[in-house]
Amino acid sequence: MQQFTFADIARIATRLGLENTHGKVWEGFDSNNEYCRAVIHTHHEGDNVPKIIVKCHVSDMNFKDVEDMYDFLNNKKRRR
Image (cartoon, rainbow, N blue to C red; front, side):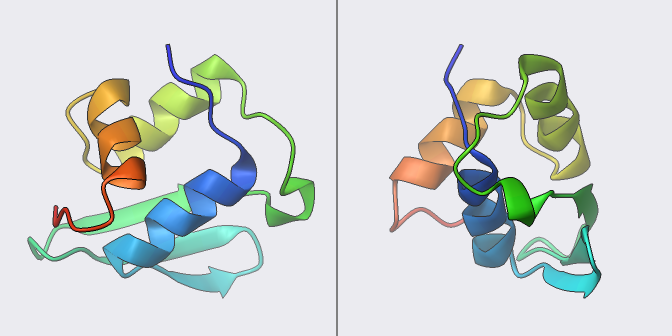
């Protein structure tokens, strides 16, 4: 399983078009017009995200699986 930091998760949320609305809550509509909402602890920016929380983010941001989310993070040209 790929390792993510909280900063990585915030970068993914930004690329999806989510906005930080209520402190830790990021929400909005992605390019497929699907609603996404995630809780991201940006004050732990450099810390690794626990695997169970990564799986929650995969679901919250409508990715197929962890590898799909990791590919989205690393492939800057990739759309949804």
